[in-house]
Length: 351
Ligand code: NAD
Image 1 (spheres, rainbow, N blue to C red):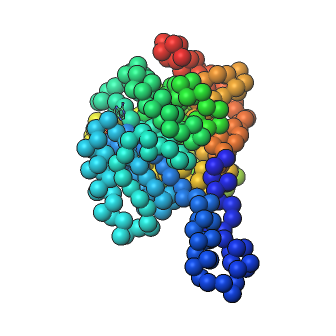
Image 2 (image 1 turned 180 degrees about the vertical axis):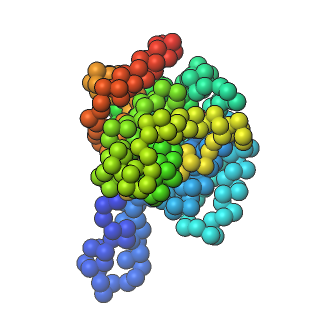
Protein backbone atom coordinates (compact mmCIF):
# COMPACT_ATOMS: atom_id res chain seq x y z
CA UNK A 1 0.00 0.00 0.00
CA UNK A 2 1.34 3.35 -1.00
CA UNK A 3 1.53 5.14 2.35
CA UNK A 4 3.75 2.54 4.03
CA UNK A 5 5.97 2.05 0.99
CA UNK A 6 6.73 5.69 0.60
CA UNK A 7 7.34 6.31 4.27
CA UNK A 8 10.19 3.79 4.39
CA UNK A 9 13.76 5.09 4.50
CA UNK A 10 15.38 8.43 5.10
CA UNK A 11 14.73 11.19 2.63
CA UNK A 12 18.27 12.32 1.98
CA UNK A 13 20.27 9.08 1.61
CA UNK A 14 22.49 9.09 4.71
CA UNK A 15 23.93 5.67 3.74
CA UNK A 16 25.29 7.25 0.56
CA UNK A 17 27.02 9.96 2.58
CA UNK A 18 29.04 7.40 4.58
CA UNK A 19 30.57 5.95 1.44
CA UNK A 20 31.59 9.27 -0.01
CA UNK A 21 32.68 11.26 3.02
CA UNK A 22 35.82 13.09 2.15
CA UNK A 23 34.44 13.84 -1.32
CA UNK A 24 32.75 17.07 -2.23
CA UNK A 25 29.41 18.26 -0.86
CA UNK A 26 28.25 18.43 -4.46
CA UNK A 27 28.30 14.63 -4.73
CA UNK A 28 26.36 14.32 -1.49
CA UNK A 29 23.65 16.68 -2.76
CA UNK A 30 23.18 14.72 -5.99
CA UNK A 31 22.72 11.48 -4.06
CA UNK A 32 20.52 13.32 -1.59
CA UNK A 33 18.15 14.52 -4.30
CA UNK A 34 17.74 11.08 -5.84
CA UNK A 35 16.96 9.69 -2.36
CA UNK A 36 14.34 12.40 -1.83
CA UNK A 37 12.07 10.77 -4.40
CA UNK A 38 11.27 8.06 -1.86
CA UNK A 39 9.91 10.55 0.68
CA UNK A 40 6.16 10.48 0.50
CA UNK A 41 4.00 13.47 1.33
CA UNK A 42 0.36 12.64 2.05
CA UNK A 43 -2.12 14.03 -0.45
CA UNK A 44 -5.91 14.29 -0.30
CA UNK A 45 -8.15 15.17 -3.24
CA UNK A 46 -11.63 16.53 -2.50
CA UNK A 47 -14.28 16.27 -5.21
CA UNK A 48 -17.02 18.74 -4.33
CA UNK A 49 -15.79 22.01 -2.85
CA UNK A 50 -19.13 23.11 -1.44
CA UNK A 51 -19.95 23.66 2.23
CA UNK A 52 -18.93 20.16 3.30
CA UNK A 53 -15.86 19.80 1.07
CA UNK A 54 -14.38 23.20 1.91
CA UNK A 55 -15.11 22.94 5.64
CA UNK A 56 -13.41 19.55 5.64
CA UNK A 57 -10.42 21.09 3.81
CA UNK A 58 -10.27 23.81 6.46
CA UNK A 59 -10.32 21.30 9.30
CA UNK A 60 -7.74 19.10 7.54
CA UNK A 61 -5.34 22.00 7.01
CA UNK A 62 -5.61 23.06 10.65
CA UNK A 63 -4.82 19.51 11.77
CA UNK A 64 -1.64 19.62 9.66
CA UNK A 65 -2.05 16.03 8.53
CA UNK A 66 -1.33 16.28 4.82
CA UNK A 67 0.99 18.20 2.51
CA UNK A 68 -1.32 18.53 -0.46
CA UNK A 69 -5.03 19.27 -0.69
CA UNK A 70 -6.58 19.60 -4.12
CA UNK A 71 -10.15 20.85 -4.54
CA UNK A 72 -12.07 19.69 -7.61
CA UNK A 73 -15.52 20.97 -8.49
CA UNK A 74 -17.68 21.28 -11.58
CA UNK A 75 -17.92 24.91 -10.47
CA UNK A 76 -14.22 25.66 -10.96
CA UNK A 77 -14.55 29.25 -9.77
CA UNK A 78 -15.97 28.10 -6.45
CA UNK A 79 -13.09 25.67 -5.99
CA UNK A 80 -10.60 28.41 -6.89
CA UNK A 81 -12.15 30.84 -4.42
CA UNK A 82 -12.08 28.26 -1.62
CA UNK A 83 -8.47 27.29 -2.38
CA UNK A 84 -7.41 30.96 -2.33
CA UNK A 85 -9.23 31.66 0.93
CA UNK A 86 -7.75 28.56 2.61
CA UNK A 87 -4.23 29.23 1.29
CA UNK A 88 -4.27 32.74 2.72
CA UNK A 89 -4.31 31.19 6.19
CA UNK A 90 -1.22 29.05 5.63
CA UNK A 91 1.06 31.35 7.59
CA UNK A 92 -0.95 30.40 10.71
CA UNK A 93 -0.78 26.59 10.33
CA UNK A 94 1.60 23.91 9.13
CA UNK A 95 2.78 24.03 5.52
CA UNK A 96 0.56 22.54 2.82
CA UNK A 97 -0.07 23.07 -0.84
CA UNK A 98 -3.76 23.81 -1.43
CA UNK A 99 -5.08 24.40 -4.92
CA UNK A 100 -8.08 24.06 -7.24
CA UNK A 101 -7.37 21.37 -9.77
CA UNK A 102 -8.97 18.91 -12.11
CA UNK A 103 -9.29 15.13 -12.16
CA UNK A 104 -5.73 14.58 -13.35
CA UNK A 105 -4.67 16.01 -9.96
CA UNK A 106 -6.15 12.93 -8.28
CA UNK A 107 -3.01 11.13 -9.43
CA UNK A 108 -0.92 10.25 -6.39
CA UNK A 109 -3.68 11.09 -3.89
CA UNK A 110 -3.78 8.67 -0.96
CA UNK A 111 -7.42 9.47 -0.27
CA UNK A 112 -10.09 10.88 -2.59
CA UNK A 113 -13.00 12.34 -0.66
CA UNK A 114 -16.29 12.74 -2.53
CA UNK A 115 -18.53 15.47 -1.15
CA UNK A 116 -20.04 16.53 -4.48
CA UNK A 117 -23.70 16.52 -5.32
CA UNK A 118 -27.04 17.75 -4.18
CA UNK A 119 -27.69 18.50 -0.50
CA UNK A 120 -30.93 18.10 1.50
CA UNK A 121 -33.39 20.93 1.46
CA UNK A 122 -35.76 21.72 4.34
CA UNK A 123 -37.90 18.65 5.14
CA UNK A 124 -36.24 16.49 2.47
CA UNK A 125 -34.93 13.04 3.45
CA UNK A 126 -31.45 11.91 2.43
CA UNK A 127 -32.89 9.02 0.43
CA UNK A 128 -34.68 11.47 -1.89
CA UNK A 129 -31.24 12.54 -3.19
CA UNK A 130 -30.26 9.04 -4.33
CA UNK A 131 -31.10 9.13 -8.04
CA UNK A 132 -29.64 12.60 -8.73
CA UNK A 133 -26.44 11.96 -6.81
CA UNK A 134 -25.99 8.52 -8.35
CA UNK A 135 -25.97 10.16 -11.82
CA UNK A 136 -23.29 12.60 -10.61
CA UNK A 137 -21.25 9.74 -9.12
CA UNK A 138 -21.17 7.87 -12.44
CA UNK A 139 -19.06 10.71 -13.88
CA UNK A 140 -17.00 11.41 -10.77
CA UNK A 141 -15.88 7.84 -10.02
CA UNK A 142 -14.84 7.12 -13.60
CA UNK A 143 -12.98 10.46 -13.79
CA UNK A 144 -11.07 9.73 -10.58
CA UNK A 145 -10.18 6.11 -11.41
CA UNK A 146 -8.82 7.17 -14.82
CA UNK A 147 -5.97 8.83 -12.89
CA UNK A 148 -5.81 6.86 -9.66
CA UNK A 149 -6.78 3.27 -8.99
CA UNK A 150 -4.80 2.89 -5.77
CA UNK A 151 -6.45 5.49 -3.55
CA UNK A 152 -8.93 5.03 -0.75
CA UNK A 153 -12.33 6.51 -1.55
CA UNK A 154 -14.00 8.31 1.33
CA UNK A 155 -17.61 9.16 0.48
CA UNK A 156 -19.80 11.64 2.33
CA UNK A 157 -22.43 12.68 -0.23
CA UNK A 158 -25.93 11.62 0.81
CA UNK A 159 -27.52 9.17 1.00
CA UNK A 160 -24.04 8.19 2.09
CA UNK A 161 -24.55 4.42 2.46
CA UNK A 162 -26.01 4.18 -1.03
CA UNK A 163 -23.33 6.44 -2.51
CA UNK A 164 -20.63 4.33 -0.82
CA UNK A 165 -22.13 1.18 -2.32
CA UNK A 166 -22.38 2.92 -5.71
CA UNK A 167 -18.70 3.96 -5.49
CA UNK A 168 -17.73 0.37 -4.72
CA UNK A 169 -19.65 -0.93 -7.74
CA UNK A 170 -18.58 1.84 -10.12
CA UNK A 171 -14.89 1.69 -9.18
CA UNK A 172 -14.45 -2.07 -8.85
CA UNK A 173 -12.12 -1.31 -5.90
CA UNK A 174 -11.67 -3.87 -3.13
CA UNK A 175 -14.15 -3.29 -0.30
CA UNK A 176 -11.52 -2.18 2.22
CA UNK A 177 -10.70 0.86 0.05
CA UNK A 178 -14.24 2.26 -0.17
CA UNK A 179 -15.41 3.93 3.02
CA UNK A 180 -18.47 6.04 3.73
CA UNK A 181 -18.49 8.59 6.56
CA UNK A 182 -21.67 6.76 7.57
CA UNK A 183 -22.72 7.27 11.18
CA UNK A 184 -19.45 8.83 12.35
CA UNK A 185 -21.42 12.07 12.68
CA UNK A 186 -24.47 10.49 14.33
CA UNK A 187 -22.24 8.66 16.80
CA UNK A 188 -20.52 11.94 17.63
CA UNK A 189 -23.89 13.63 18.14
CA UNK A 190 -25.00 10.71 20.33
CA UNK A 191 -21.87 10.92 22.48
CA UNK A 192 -22.35 14.68 22.76
CA UNK A 193 -25.98 14.55 23.98
CA UNK A 194 -25.23 11.66 26.35
CA UNK A 195 -22.17 13.52 27.65
CA UNK A 196 -24.35 16.57 28.35
CA UNK A 197 -26.91 14.44 30.18
CA UNK A 198 -24.36 12.45 32.18
CA UNK A 199 -22.09 15.45 32.79
CA UNK A 200 -19.03 13.76 31.31
CA UNK A 201 -16.72 14.57 28.42
CA UNK A 202 -18.26 13.08 25.22
CA UNK A 203 -14.91 11.43 24.48
CA UNK A 204 -15.50 9.25 27.55
CA UNK A 205 -18.95 8.14 26.39
CA UNK A 206 -18.73 4.85 24.50
CA UNK A 207 -21.90 4.53 22.50
CA UNK A 208 -22.61 3.85 18.84
CA UNK A 209 -25.18 4.59 16.22
CA UNK A 210 -25.20 1.85 13.58
CA UNK A 211 -27.04 1.13 10.33
CA UNK A 212 -28.10 3.85 7.91
CA UNK A 213 -26.87 7.42 8.27
CA UNK A 214 -30.47 8.55 8.20
CA UNK A 215 -33.99 7.91 9.39
CA UNK A 216 -33.58 4.16 10.09
CA UNK A 217 -30.37 4.44 12.13
CA UNK A 218 -30.12 2.38 15.32
CA UNK A 219 -28.77 3.40 18.76
CA UNK A 220 -26.92 0.58 20.49
CA UNK A 221 -28.22 1.18 24.02
CA UNK A 222 -27.34 -2.29 25.23
CA UNK A 223 -23.59 -1.61 24.96
CA UNK A 224 -23.50 2.12 25.83
CA UNK A 225 -21.19 2.79 28.75
CA UNK A 226 -19.07 5.31 30.62
CA UNK A 227 -15.92 3.94 32.27
CA UNK A 228 -17.08 0.41 31.48
CA UNK A 229 -20.29 1.07 33.45
CA UNK A 230 -23.61 0.48 31.67
CA UNK A 231 -25.96 3.48 31.60
CA UNK A 232 -28.44 1.72 33.95
CA UNK A 233 -25.74 1.98 36.66
CA UNK A 234 -24.01 5.16 35.52
CA UNK A 235 -27.18 7.34 35.48
CA UNK A 236 -27.86 7.05 39.25
CA UNK A 237 -24.14 7.48 39.90
CA UNK A 238 -24.20 10.94 38.30
CA UNK A 239 -27.58 11.83 39.80
CA UNK A 240 -29.75 11.28 36.69
CA UNK A 241 -32.69 8.93 36.19
CA UNK A 242 -32.30 5.90 33.94
CA UNK A 243 -35.49 6.67 32.08
CA UNK A 244 -36.08 4.90 28.74
CA UNK A 245 -38.52 7.52 27.48
CA UNK A 246 -36.10 10.34 28.17
CA UNK A 247 -33.12 8.48 26.70
CA UNK A 248 -35.17 7.70 23.61
CA UNK A 249 -35.96 11.43 23.25
CA UNK A 250 -32.19 12.08 23.30
CA UNK A 251 -31.71 9.58 20.48
CA UNK A 252 -34.49 11.22 18.45
CA UNK A 253 -32.64 14.53 18.77
CA UNK A 254 -29.60 12.81 17.28
CA UNK A 255 -31.51 11.11 14.47
CA UNK A 256 -33.35 14.31 13.51
CA UNK A 257 -30.44 16.72 14.07
CA UNK A 258 -29.82 17.37 10.36
CA UNK A 259 -33.49 18.36 9.84
CA UNK A 260 -33.29 20.73 12.83
CA UNK A 261 -30.05 22.35 11.68
CA UNK A 262 -31.10 22.61 8.02
CA UNK A 263 -34.32 24.32 9.08
CA UNK A 264 -32.26 26.91 10.96
CA UNK A 265 -29.21 27.49 8.73
CA UNK A 266 -29.80 25.57 5.51
CA UNK A 267 -26.86 23.17 5.75
CA UNK A 268 -24.71 21.08 8.11
CA UNK A 269 -20.96 21.10 7.61
CA UNK A 270 -18.78 21.77 10.67
CA UNK A 271 -19.22 18.47 12.51
CA UNK A 272 -19.01 16.36 9.34
CA UNK A 273 -15.87 18.29 8.34
CA UNK A 274 -14.29 17.24 11.64
CA UNK A 275 -15.57 13.67 11.25
CA UNK A 276 -13.98 13.35 7.81
CA UNK A 277 -10.72 14.72 9.21
CA UNK A 278 -10.83 12.10 11.95
CA UNK A 279 -11.21 9.30 9.37
CA UNK A 280 -8.37 10.69 7.23
CA UNK A 281 -6.19 10.94 10.34
CA UNK A 282 -6.86 7.28 11.20
CA UNK A 283 -5.81 6.25 7.68
CA UNK A 284 -2.75 8.48 7.29
CA UNK A 285 -1.41 7.62 10.76
CA UNK A 286 -2.25 3.92 10.37
CA UNK A 287 -4.03 4.12 13.71
CA UNK A 288 -6.24 1.01 13.88
CA UNK A 289 -8.85 3.44 15.19
CA UNK A 290 -12.33 2.21 15.94
CA UNK A 291 -14.80 4.38 14.02
CA UNK A 292 -18.43 3.93 12.99
CA UNK A 293 -18.06 4.17 9.24
CA UNK A 294 -19.97 2.67 6.35
CA UNK A 295 -18.50 -0.20 4.35
CA UNK A 296 -19.54 -3.35 2.56
CA UNK A 297 -20.97 -5.84 5.06
CA UNK A 298 -21.12 -9.58 4.59
CA UNK A 299 -23.01 -11.93 6.87
CA UNK A 300 -23.54 -9.37 9.60
CA UNK A 301 -26.68 -10.50 11.45
CA UNK A 302 -27.84 -11.96 8.11
CA UNK A 303 -27.14 -8.70 6.29
CA UNK A 304 -24.92 -9.05 3.21
CA UNK A 305 -23.88 -7.07 0.14
CA UNK A 306 -24.86 -3.57 1.24
CA UNK A 307 -22.93 -0.72 2.83
CA UNK A 308 -23.93 0.29 6.36
CA UNK A 309 -22.14 1.55 9.45
CA UNK A 310 -20.86 -0.56 12.31
CA UNK A 311 -17.79 0.10 14.45
CA UNK A 312 -14.79 -0.78 12.28
CA UNK A 313 -11.02 -0.73 12.61
CA UNK A 314 -9.57 1.89 10.26
CA UNK A 315 -5.90 2.04 9.27
CA UNK A 316 -3.75 2.71 6.18
CA UNK A 317 -5.47 -0.16 4.36
CA UNK A 318 -8.84 1.56 4.87
CA UNK A 319 -11.27 -0.82 6.58
CA UNK A 320 -9.13 -3.44 8.33
CA UNK A 321 -11.96 -5.22 10.22
CA UNK A 322 -15.62 -4.72 10.98
CA UNK A 323 -16.50 -5.48 14.59
CA UNK A 324 -19.30 -7.95 15.25
CA UNK A 325 -21.20 -6.29 18.09
CA UNK A 326 -23.26 -8.34 20.56
CA UNK A 327 -26.58 -6.65 19.82
CA UNK A 328 -29.88 -7.33 21.60
CA UNK A 329 -33.01 -8.51 19.77
CA UNK A 330 -34.42 -5.00 19.22
CA UNK A 331 -31.14 -3.71 17.88
CA UNK A 332 -30.79 -6.66 15.49
CA UNK A 333 -34.32 -6.06 14.17
CA UNK A 334 -33.63 -2.34 13.73
CA UNK A 335 -30.35 -3.02 11.95
CA UNK A 336 -31.95 -5.56 9.60
CA UNK A 337 -34.75 -3.09 8.82
CA UNK A 338 -32.16 -0.42 8.00
CA UNK A 339 -30.48 -2.91 5.61
CA UNK A 340 -33.81 -3.77 4.00
CA UNK A 341 -34.48 -0.08 3.25
CA UNK A 342 -30.97 0.39 1.81
CA UNK A 343 -31.36 -2.67 -0.40
CA UNK A 344 -34.61 -1.33 -1.82
CA UNK A 345 -32.97 1.98 -2.72
CA UNK A 346 -29.94 0.21 -4.23
CA UNK A 347 -32.29 -1.97 -6.28
CA UNK A 348 -34.21 1.06 -7.54
CA UNK A 349 -30.88 2.42 -8.86
CA UNK A 350 -30.16 -0.99 -10.47
CA UNK A 351 -27.01 -1.36 -8.38
P1 NAD B 1 -22.99 22.12 -1.69
O1 NAD B 1 -24.10 22.36 -2.67
O2 NAD B 1 -22.48 23.26 -0.88
O3 NAD B 1 -21.74 21.49 -2.46
C1 NAD B 1 -21.84 20.50 -3.40
C2 NAD B 1 -20.77 20.77 -4.43
O4 NAD B 1 -20.77 19.69 -5.37
C3 NAD B 1 -21.01 22.05 -5.23
O5 NAD B 1 -19.88 22.90 -5.12
C4 NAD B 1 -21.22 21.57 -6.66
O6 NAD B 1 -20.73 22.46 -7.63
C5 NAD B 1 -20.45 20.25 -6.63
N1 NAD B 1 -20.81 19.35 -7.70
C6 NAD B 1 -22.04 19.03 -8.16
N2 NAD B 1 -21.95 18.17 -9.19
C7 NAD B 1 -20.64 17.92 -9.37
C8 NAD B 1 -19.92 17.10 -10.29
N3 NAD B 1 -20.54 16.38 -11.22
N4 NAD B 1 -18.58 17.11 -10.20
C9 NAD B 1 -17.93 17.84 -9.28
N5 NAD B 1 -18.57 18.63 -8.38
C10 NAD B 1 -19.91 18.67 -8.43
O7 NAD B 1 -23.48 20.93 -0.75
P2 NAD B 1 -22.85 20.51 0.66
O8 NAD B 1 -23.63 21.17 1.74
O9 NAD B 1 -21.39 20.67 0.59
O10 NAD B 1 -23.26 18.96 0.70
C11 NAD B 1 -22.61 18.04 -0.15
C12 NAD B 1 -23.14 16.65 0.10
O11 NAD B 1 -22.75 16.23 1.43
C13 NAD B 1 -24.67 16.54 0.07
O12 NAD B 1 -25.07 15.35 -0.54
C14 NAD B 1 -25.04 16.52 1.55
O13 NAD B 1 -26.29 15.90 1.79
C15 NAD B 1 -23.90 15.71 2.09
N6 NAD B 1 -23.70 15.80 3.55
C16 NAD B 1 -23.36 14.63 4.14
C17 NAD B 1 -23.19 14.59 5.50
C18 NAD B 1 -22.84 13.27 6.12
O14 NAD B 1 -22.81 13.13 7.36
N7 NAD B 1 -22.59 12.25 5.34
C19 NAD B 1 -23.33 15.76 6.28
C20 NAD B 1 -23.64 16.94 5.62
C21 NAD B 1 -23.84 16.95 4.25
